[in-house]
Image 1: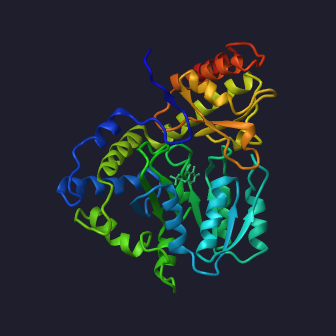
Image 2: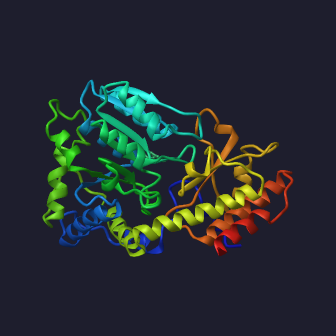
Image 3: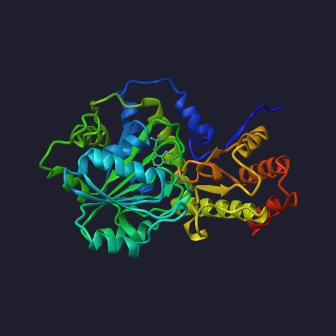
Length: 387
Ligand code: PMP
């Protein structure tokens, strides 16, 4: 018995051996020349991975929620109108954060599994007075992918800043940050970026930096204030030491390795690999007679899939899949939580992982008495992978 599970939840994910080895290097001083190089180079590589060549990158110690908090705290001023394009649990969180900082939040929502499209966003923007539009690239609670290009386009036309929560998308789901007009692109380390949990990463456009610089009220968060972090990021990029809060030295070493691996693969190839593996996984799921939560294939994320339990099967399917050595996650969207489960397929994921996961899902469904042709999901996925 190998006694090893395959982690297929929507983050944290399995990391490459090289990333884990970097993490295990002796911790150095945050002002040591080798760490300054590692931090500075990581900031530079972020622009290439986020496809945001003119943006200001930030690497902060904290989880993805810190990235959301930092984005709002720095560019929202009390009384600003905020439109949250809502696709689920994490879009709600963005609205909560905006409210906490005094934003007037309008929630543009859709049924679970759906998301307002660009034309609905355009209509909502015409009907109100908004400074900021928030988009969740991939809502981890439903596996719904946003049309970032379309929504950001209408938001920019309406003169709004666009904040993109791509915690479950960056470096997996296509995002051409600068070309698409995303102002703040935030993510966390533990998903497709491929680094253990603990880093919040942001790129901030020149327009968003200008909004930050011309704000009339102080940033209402001490730790997240760009005024404190900007000189530090600039110092490291210029290969000088800086200090505001101690950087997560080992995580930054791991980030440096992972960003290099991502850029070695190439962004287009990486987006295509995620699409291909997700498509094969969905083919397998559908061949088993199961449905996905997203309302259509166009709305299905390349980084995770949310799958409805078939009739007669419920949340105890997840531990049954776990008994087969594959860790998946239960539902998260409060309205439909008990009716579906989630499988993450991002970062270093490969075809073997997809097939192993479908195999474990088939065995668990059989154990729960669901009737289907054993092997049909695997065969469909394999056909897609051989195409
Ligand atoms: N946004 C999205 C889309 C997420 O998936 C998550 C985490 N699952 C978060 C924000 C929050 O990130 P964290 O848990 O790292 O704070």
